[in-house]
Image (cartoon, rainbow, N blue to C red; front, side, top):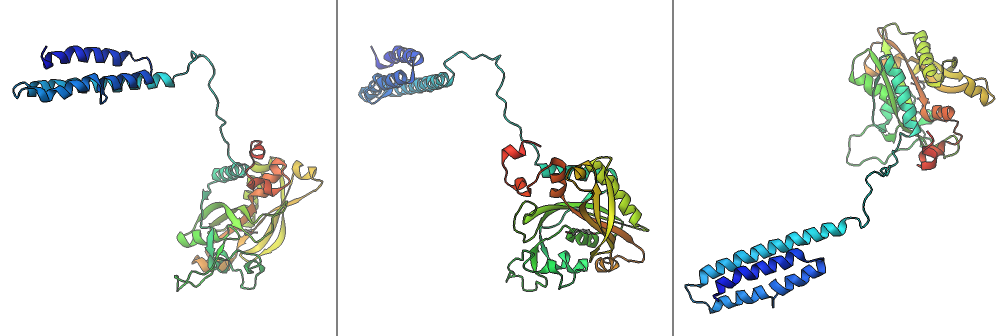
Length: 341
Ligand code: DAH
């Protein structure tokens, strides 16, 4: 039989064996038997050399085509067997319920922040933000806070190493101690009127204990327009705290001092939560009418514009609302704690 006539039957046998190999080990063995160095098909190729010049091209072409077919069959069977190996051995019951992945939820501080923000959005306030790495100008000077104010002491505030590359740096960098710095940034970037709230992270050099943490969160509010009064401030604060802490919540203003407001007040509130703690009132926020000097500093005319500002701690509200007695729990990321809210 001529070589070329041998190719087809040999190929058919090889294809049959490859396609029916029961597992990968058998398949690899079949591959060796046909296409390996001592394989039957390889042997056929070796005989090419003995053919005449006339016979060689046609036989070579036929052998190559057959080899490509065998290799394709080998790859296809390999894939089939791999797929079969990956399938479960037991029959699958597709009616079984799926495995549920636990869905995370928002951190309690984020939930409280969202509630505060949505209360303020109802009365037309927009959310603003500013950098946590601030300079002394925005954090203190522009807010009329004198150089000898204790908040500026290195004992109370995190100062950053001066950057030698910033040769003209006139004001020291620090981690902002309150969100009030954003009042300045917003007023400098837009003309009045202003109606913003600023939720954000702030920093103080406090040792962590049940009620203090070097990092915590505040919400700042700022309202600037014509003929704004303390009555507007009180009405707004009352609306928001009733939304947050329940309709029966009462608030009261006590005179206080902040350098960026005049007059200034501390806000106390009272409701069932406070009574449960055995108290009548609990201090919750600082506020006041924006100091004319602050308006001068940002280029607003204090004879034309008036406004109020307030600031309070978000942790404080969340602790009261959820009955949490240690502020550090918020930052430990213990799922057993976080799951409860
Ligand atoms: N910045 C103050 C603090 O961190 C809170 C505060 C008081 C903010 C009075 C204000 C304000 O905007 O008017 O304790």
